[in-house]
Length: 555
Image (tube, rainbow, N blue to C red):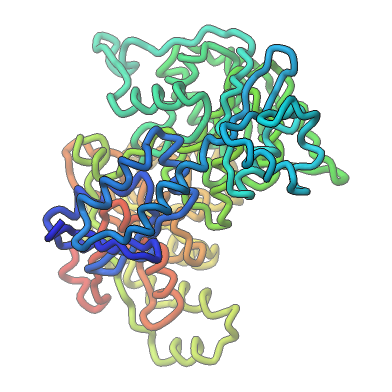
């Protein structure tokens, strides 16, 4: 304890000294239960939250383990009150349990009768439960299973759902024993992918957190093989749907005829159906017109890709799917809308989480060098920014004309690399496309044209591509090794993670990936950049800061 890297404070913050020789071990040890708040150069601030502690509890960590970690790595004595609070907070999870009852169907039972009495007194549980069966249990309407879990979480008593799942319609799915690219070579899931599938299956439902490029689709395929049932897969867009289909055909015994696409373009329902969030959340005259898809088959498994992006209506729909196994896949549980608790209560707790640096150390994702390039605005641009209305400041800073020159210089420093330029504002992207003589992909680009350009980029036919937010997620571009970010969704940490993820797939020659964020100095662009980088700092990625005037030395 005398010289640990951690300072544990009574306000539930943990200060981690980055340069300490044991900081890496401490970071990994606290990751299951602590959330990063700030990550400047030398000291990173984490916070203990009820949701973080409940996620850890659901994943099998008990209070004793958490307390031992804090004691082992703390430089100073740990406040006793905090240790007591950790134990008491974690003990709240599971005092209420949802269980299947042989005669009454679904029942909420308590290991602590006073807790049951407390939550039933709340007006928020009214209408969600039925008759009391005694002082330690109450009947629950099966249709309210999800809603009740949401309410109990908000009341501070998260229920452990042990009620089980319907088997669903059987449909045989097996993983391919060989690599499609090399039929004579055996193929199997990587060890961490296997662990993720086992962790999910043991829990029955929940979220698997893996870095971009680490093969979340394979985890989905592994869960499908374990389930051996009809499966509904929800994805962010049509391009992602087709990538899922192609990967399932390559890695499993499924044929194209067994996989349906349910999107704006097609409405196929097959034993494995891949639907986009957009089509499910489409309303006509105030009604969700495609909700019948959720009951179109007796699904044995529902997979949510990029679960951190789930639109609010999908949460409401998921509340009605609690009897089905649910697997959420994501690179980060960070949600900019703060609805992580909805993911916990409706999809399920975190079942597996692999730190990016651990996967990198195993050689499964590329090492990455992160550079923030700071640009000083011209006098004219500074004056325009200084006198702009608050709502216009970010756009002015993010689209500063000087960024075009910086992007050209960075691209010129990587003549033989596959370079992605990523931004938010379409006029800026069109301009950059002209400067780099590179094609531009935006939301207006047809799915067919997107696929054609992505394929040309993968094959090396083109080595420069300018993309809008459509490339934030679920785009598989294994050859991309340089990403240049010029603008983004304000301070979005999840977007930063997704964008770095575009270049994280391992390179055949083992080279390092490069991620550049071009930022206007002394503006909200710089403020947002600091916020965006927090998640990656938690994963161990430090940003070097380079002045745009010194770009000649950036390699």
